[in-house]
Length: 504
Image (cartoon, rainbow, N blue to C red; front, side, top):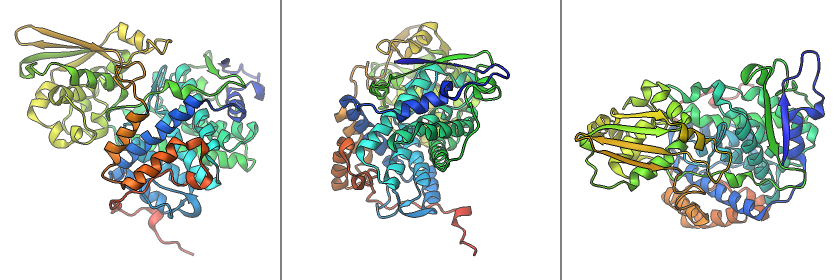
């Protein structure tokens, strides 16, 4: 690995282009490197994982709205949409938009946590969309996915966005652009210009995940994919972008991150090293914020004879992030509101613990219904749950050794008679360090569970075979990677700008 040092330029002293971090990212993306067999297998797992959650959300309102917008932009020979017959094609940027929303809607796919937070699988929809529209083969697509994951993980390890209340799309967009550049074999100069453009456009605030969280949380990756594709298209046409986007006196590090005296160190593979960062990422067995995964597993495994009606206090000792973002340290009253949005509830560890303690299971739909959230016993238990930061868990969260890194906590249930029940869990069962690390068979199980009612068994089998052999696919086979459904697709009843007839 090669460590790149990023500093804000001194006034009046420009940073040579070849020393700029955007150039280093572009140079990495443009380089030739082998595709590791383990990486190819994990890419197959991620394709299946994304399709599972996209198909399970196919008729949810945000996905329906995004699909309607995409269908208003038809293009012969364009890209396909999850759920829609493959003969229907739309412009690549709109396919990235709609498919990105479908993948993200249930908050149920892969994750990577370090200095910041991420869902690296969000890079896959725009890469598939461009591969379909541009006639790329499976080797090109796999290369692009591996590079996108590598860039995303490297940024998340080294640069904290949340510290400055910036949303994590700011790391997602350069990863997407790097992946697109790698898949299309674009020159370093083109990728560099696109990264400068994309990062400028990608910075937004964390309010999208604070207070009353709306469906925009699901739309963010689609916005990122659309932004990335448009930035690459502009750069391919010879257009330049303001630079340097990272080191500039008035750019993102100086004014949006650690300031003019900041220094970041980001490591990327050497020229001949494979991109293997995808192997450090992990998916979700439960449809909830990742920091809740181990705690849901903990609740499921507790003794059934605990009398929750006699619980006087439920304390979760956990990391700084879990306490301050999805716990009571966030000081969000919405996280304690039974009438809050689903997006808010899946970012409320107090709600999640209340339901998981009562039900000893988790379901991507049933655990979030209004009836479930307003159940009297749940609300009573919910109000007794609080969180606090434990430095031990914070240190484990930021542990540099991935074999020791942990995202769980300790639950202490205090009963009326003073009895304290203590249980802790470091990582989710599905995590690579967990009790039952997920393998190919687990991803297939997730796909069958979530897609069984919406796709035919024939489509199921065809898609799985394609995903399993992604790096060998032909361009025509790439066009079959967003499976159609066998059920009726909901239509958005409202009309928007894109639905109005053309005026000549």
